[in-house]
Length: 195
Image (cartoon, rainbow, N blue to C red):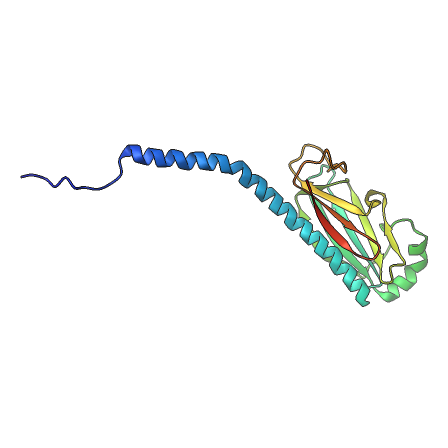
């Protein structure tokens, strides 16, 4: 008896060629995927920070809080940064107004905030300073203060994997991906990708 020789299938050589093609495509696309993923995560954090600042300024302009604060805190080693916002009620603001007006920054530790941590996020990213820095806005824009670390009215967010402890403010030396978030006394906030 004769067997039927019409058996269809792939040869081992054809399977090896397909596997080699898949490996080559994966090897070429992996670095680009990692770069895209890092940029995506950093962009998401930048959007969240812009949203936090816009949200707290909006609450101030609507009258919920006459005085508000945005705070960024980094670990001493860099790599982990938390962002939070706080609000001060009208009665608390009136009691502390003289101190607020005479102070050069808005990070004074003795200051009482009615709403601690209205918004809070914690991300593994680096910024352009080490420690704690803040900026404060008032309802009528008459009070706008930031400490020395945010004196340029901006913050730069960069990838946690950079070798430096902080993100540089020199755009020519900055490793991408990085985002610059700027604001002014009127609460206008912009996000710009650094390239």
